[in-house]
Length: 104
Image 1 (cartoon, rainbow, N blue to C red):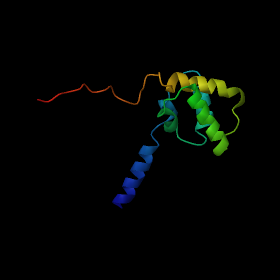
Image 2 (image 1 turned 120 degrees about the horizontal axis):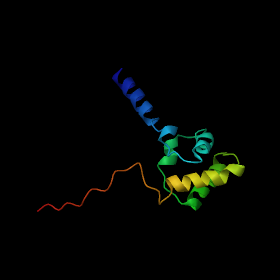
Image 3 (image 1 turned 135 degrees about the vertical axis):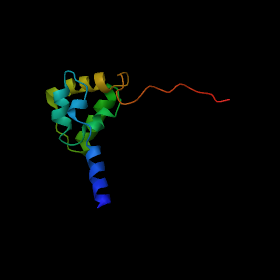
């Protein structure tokens, strides 16, 4: 009984990333429409890639996971991903680094 409750609690917690947690900007609706069909948004929000990295990821999904052609939506999707989840984007997922403390 206890293990069943724990299982459901952990399963529910793993679904915690919602579209509301994506950064609000132009292109977010395209991410919700194209990405959520196959995986959680946490998979999007946990990565930091440049434009080429995101494009390679899209091509990989198209080649091996049957992601459909994005057509005219590909550029706006890449724009959104790079500006919000690129290597230079401010991270919302981590706290600031702790100061280095030396103990005597």
